[in-house]
Length: 185
Image (cartoon, rainbow, N blue to C red):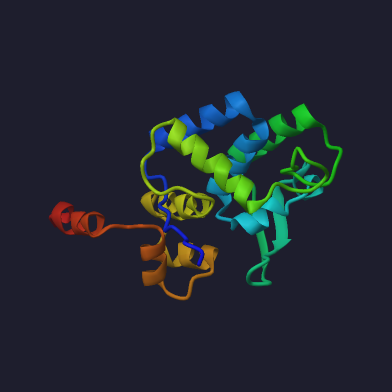
């Protein structure tokens, strides 16, 4: 039997910045994985299959999602473009995989990506359950916190209902209760 732990989004911008600093100091590849993950909402299976050609000198990523078979086409934020430029300046535009394994010309595995993300989270003192899906959930959580309509986030994440998206991104009852308390019309 395989136990799959339910993971949480990263709800603190300070912790996001701490993880980014940790990765930037130790590995631009892992920094890019984190930055692209939290800014795109892609599943880890799609992130790991990105090639250098998919992102080199481009403003958009266009791919076919592994899970759904749907085409995903979205622009890259300035943060993502800068992380891509820094990483490619270090490794060069040669090779196929963006997140190349050190053990040959193949991408890192989901398990390795999990270890990378989880280790960084523990290093900065995060206690919540963190894994590869945390990146996607963090994207949805912060889009919501920044005022993006839940139905837009639902569409971006390919969910069937807004209630699924709210549960998925970890919006708590306390956060929803705050609406009642602070509205005061």
